Image (cartoon, rainbow, N blue to C red):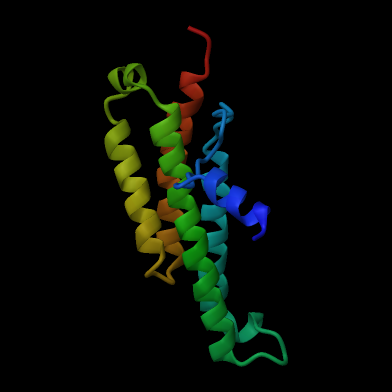
Length: 145
């Protein structure tokens, strides 16, 4: 009988947990969501111009399929960055001072969800505009009182 597997079985945690940051790090910035949203809009634009954008050895269908997969991944990343900002950075005091925060985050995350279905760059711009509203409030909260 080997001892190591027996010991590992007893010391292995029953549940593994994952977190955005183990400390938490305290580093927050809507720029993370904005950069991913810029990627969403750029892919929407490339999808619209797929004939000119695709490589010589790539079919139109393959190019567009890859574009859709990338866009959906980036849209999910936008939502994740917004959720972390909303749930980990903003406090009840912020909400008291900026009661529109709930609606702003709801709108932005809904736009990120819509981006998964839309190939229209105008939709991508609406997502960027929604993030810009959050960005403005975020930086106001960073100003000394």
